[in-house]
Length: 475
Image (tube, rainbow, N blue to C red):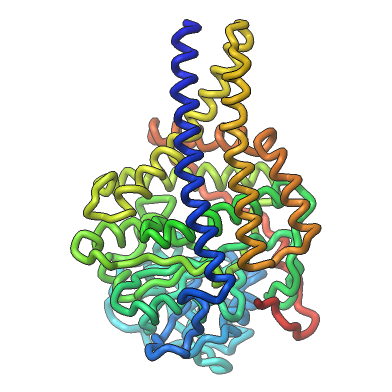
């Protein structure tokens, strides 16, 4: 038995080495791209309006039980510096005062309902327009879930491009302007653009705008800042460069409206609808349109509040991993196939190996190591090497993400970076084990056909009431 465990552990060690090599390659590519960006090279430095093409934009924000935030969020969306802009807020069957607050704040009046909508959705009760700002439209519909609300918004939106934003997220004033640039540069090839998502916990927010950044002292929030920096700036920059990006975050993404309509809108058959629509774009278009692109605009920033407790984080991560497994199953035909470009050859295998299977390998690896120690069959040289490769990969990723952040964006103070570094050093001890277990738990749920529920995340960071007109944080 000891020999079998040792052979399995060697295979797991090889897995982590492969993960380190693959991820290290992504880090190098991202660092190179952000270095060019910091020197003013590359198209991301261009501004919307400087180019010949200037598409119209409709911002769609699905809202459910968002009465506390909705007026502030609507004002923030309307404060974007992009023109022409239309804002469509979809009240997805809220039982609170979401619609009433919008009606009072913006003097809504009903519009005649059109006939059949271009995408099916739960019944639409009314479509209203604001007298105080005609750019705002509010859709009231029966509850059908986030995907259903987005589809209803797509039926009402009139812009060439649609910006999809969560109602509790905060867009920087220039976010849409920057996210639209790839569409202006590649009008025939750019299908979607994902924005950079940053953690609002710890930041100072006044009047729906981030006026100063900060890092919460608590480990749950601070470690998630590291996660988001790694995910959005240490890897997605590289995937975008290879045209293998398989996720445009639901918190902030820009799409060609006609494309989403032609694809049938957002799917209701997955808990990861944002990843699924991105995969579907690659799956449907890439075989015939080799140059079709899904890009990432790191400087188009959206702030979102993340879970502040392990309990709410657990629910979120189980749901996310279930969505990942849903999408890998739905688009398994892309796996390893050159006709889908880097998305099929590199990105899909990466997701399967280092996202879907990694929790199982990680937990199994440490379980075997502990068993060998108990049985006194350990090889200390091997154990040290195993521990280093399994844990230091994350530390290197965190350090590189912080380096990319400092070179390209410099949003955090030196004290904040020091705090992030400190939490990063202990992440593998207290944060990664439960994360791996929750993801493994989601896998077990998927195998037995059990679906996790949608537990709301307690909010707090974005609820500060405006006291005066302030200058938002920009760079």
